[in-house]
Length: 247
Length: 287
Image 1: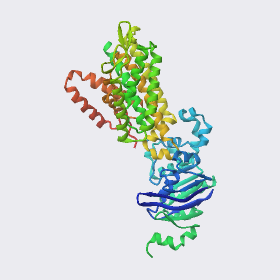
Image 2 (image 1 turned 30 degrees about the horizontal axis):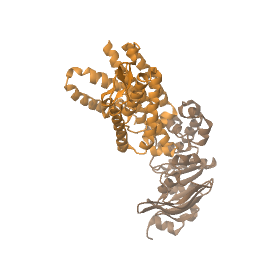
Image 3 (image 1 turned 120 degrees about the vertical axis):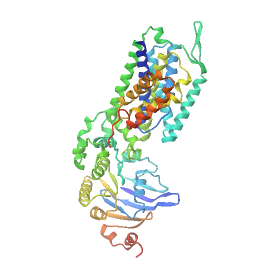
Image 4 (image 1 turned 90 degrees about the vertical axis):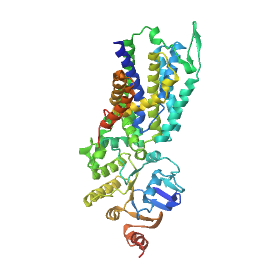
């Protein structure tokens, strides 16, 4: 479904992602791990088109993404969440989801005027369903900025889902979460897979990565140093070396 | 009574000017070009009634459309830059338009006199209201019909998904882009709507003052345009109206007796108001 071919992104002399090959199959939960600064977030940014590629190519559903802008990639079904939460703080929870309804299904089903100028009536059902899924139904009229940290993380995920993704890139969704919240996140990720969404999970929290992913790639200094099932990666000497240093 | 009608006319036109900047400010863009669109609407509508003999409402409509078209054309290149760069770019455009009017001569003979724009001397005798025998009160009502219509339109837009998208772009462009918002389309459309409102306001302005010249569309006016929504707060359109009343009625007219002290107090009171109400006169603090 998603294929990175020798994808590279350099910032001046810094090779944040350097000749990366990745293949994510449809329906998979694919983990991307690595130490701080290994290029995981940059990988997300090149797939969503926030950073143009320095060289190489990204192919999605058989189509090269080239220099397609971010909002066009979203219409192809590529959505993301942010590591450092980026909600629209002065909009309500409900409005955060409303703003995100930009998928072709949404734009095709409604006319131009009802899509842009219509009020909240026509879309209540869909948004209610997303709020239910994220456990935010009781908070729908609250300003996003007033939510607790855990609620904001859930809204980030719900907002990405409001775009009806086929491929969802989660950039450290468990950062700062406690054990119980990680458990809830894990069950949500598994539910998303059942709905047919392919997931690329960038994460530090091994408890989550090892538990949900089908396959994992390990990055270090912008390059892939290992790939395989969670069990294979866990026992890979190159991975141990990258995480623990020296030894 | 005439004085108060006149004051209400000024408040109405300045509210339109402020609202033209309000919608652009919602997307987080600071524009110094609103005086230029205001001037374009003023000259176009004035020339259509005076030189072409058009009725007023279609002339205002065309002035507004040309304002919108100019704003759209300026928006595409200008909105590629942000923040201070956008301020400088729109400022340069605004000054360019003002200098164009400074040099713009297009006069035709009408009976014994020549009418039309005459460069630095400006465009005199835009006497549509006088020629058609409108009273000051009627002109005031005419102006406020447009003000109420524009406020209602923006109030409604603010509550639509488009309004939520505008505010989302204003808060975080990167996040908005990542949920599929086409930033260029959203920013340019806001700029275009702003240009239409400024053009309409300018057309009305030309007809109630009867005499316009390039200095009516200078940087000071552009500054007022963005100052109203900023002082009033971006929560809703009434903030802009409140700020216009505060500035035009209270500060400019109310303090007239103070003579030279007025200018000093004027600045001090705006600073005071912004300190007491940092989110605008009508602004809400959410976080």
